[in-house]
Amino acid sequence: MADPASPDDRTPQSDHARATPAYDMGYLAYHDKRFSGPPRSGWHKSKRETSGMNVSRRLWDQRQGLRRDYEAVHGTDPTQWPVRHPGVVLDAVQWIAHSACLGCEWMDRQGVYMKESGWRERALAAAREHEESWHR
Image (cartoon, one colour):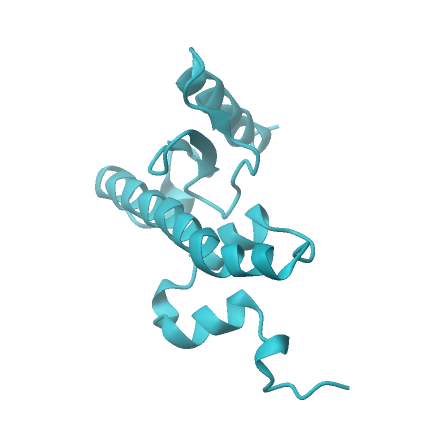
């Protein structure tokens, strides 16, 4: 059995968990959604730990900014919001927009290619579908 402190046994999550303040760890949920399964190679693992973390962090930061804007209008108590799972479109990272939710950690993993016409409408439709699924 490998030594738990061995660098080979560390996951990207644990490396960043030590380097990031606890109050700002929500982006790891997005990282886990975007990169499920084991890395295919050492290079792939390295990209997950660097670029993958940065992209996940940017998407989460955009989501949190949109949530603050929503809370400024509707209050900070989600049970009092007009919609419990408000859908949004995250477009902070070039070329792929992701539908997401301000009420939970849901994010459309695949996303929508932003160079295609109608990308924002398709992403918003997926966000609205998630939003409405909680009302059924």
